[in-house]
Image 1: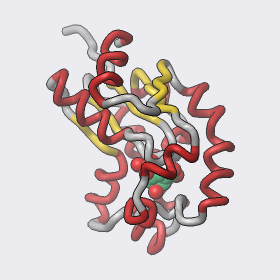
Image 2 (image 1 turned 60 degrees about the vertical axis):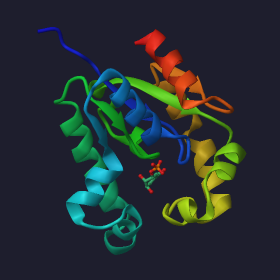
Image 3 (image 1 turned 135 degrees about the vertical axis):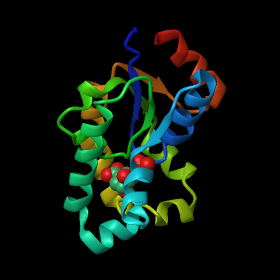
Length: 164
Ligand code: S3P
């Protein structure tokens, strides 16, 4: 049987990784997995609670375990967390799509409630610095970059499907 690559979505908080990964899974009839949601389910806590109770380093180790698991799969549409680009085997997971947008666009898109759920978006100045520190890695890790500002989910899906 032909090997069907996984598609993984990367990018900063608020860029729509989960929305697009889910939409792609529905469109292509693939399995949809969300790294943050799987980690949260394992521990029975929200990601913010995991950061608070166990610390960021613990969360990053859980992300690495997810990455090792994803690398064993085929044909799955995968949403990652914003810091997932630091796992050591991202390139082994599959075709990597970076959803790119300016920091201010992402900030405006996330409601206060959505920002409150994200421990690393809590302090805006720190979040902005983190965004700039990661830009290069997002671009270098990507097999495809989609500029998401003012694009509908449908148009992004169409653009993506032309490339995979
Ligand atoms: C993080 C992004 C979050 C989540 C955690 C850490 C980050 O995911 O994994 O709060 O380091 O950028 P989203 O990108 O889905 O918000």
